[in-house]
Every structure is written in C-alpha cells, then in structure tokens.
Image (cartoon, rainbow, N blue to C red; front, top):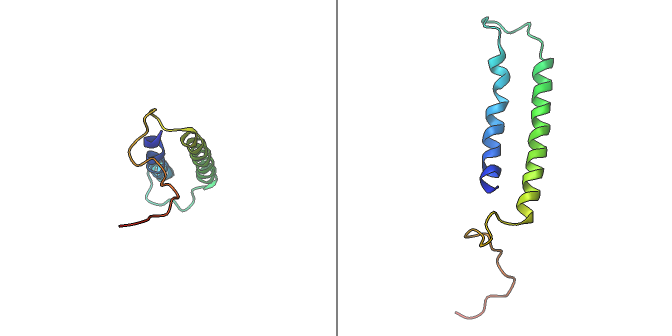
Amino acid sequence: MRDAARFLPVVGAALMVVPILWGDGSASQAGRPLGRDALYLFSLWLALVLAAFWLSRKLHDGPDDPAGAPGDELPDDRPVTGG
C-alpha cells in the first residue's frame, strides 16, 4: 500500500498531460473546444482525491506486513534524560 501511495502522484501527473495528446494533428488548436478537457481533468482530480482518501484509510488501518517496516514506529513521548 505504501508503494501505491508513493506512486499515486506520478500516475496523476502522467494522466494530467493526456489532454495535450488529444490534438487533431493541426498546428493550431485555437478553435478546439475545451469542455472535454475540463471534464476529463475534473474527473481525474476527483478520482485522485478519492484514491488518496482510500489509500490513507488503508494505511491508517495498519502496515502491510505484521512486523511493520523500519521507521514506521512512532516516537514515544517520554522526555529524554541523561547523557
């Protein structure tokens, strides 16, 4: 799950550039309607938000492996004493 959470922004960034590839091959894109692009981007944004929420809930439930990964433990709140 942690790998998916780290990879989600990369996938999101790659999917954000897809509307650039939708051109019709002409040099000028001035008369191109942007409604489809806007709908795609807002839908993608919503999907990324929901995926991040789902991943955060799954990660909050517990680690992938029962032993836990190094660095996953939270620091204790005891004061540091001595040398």
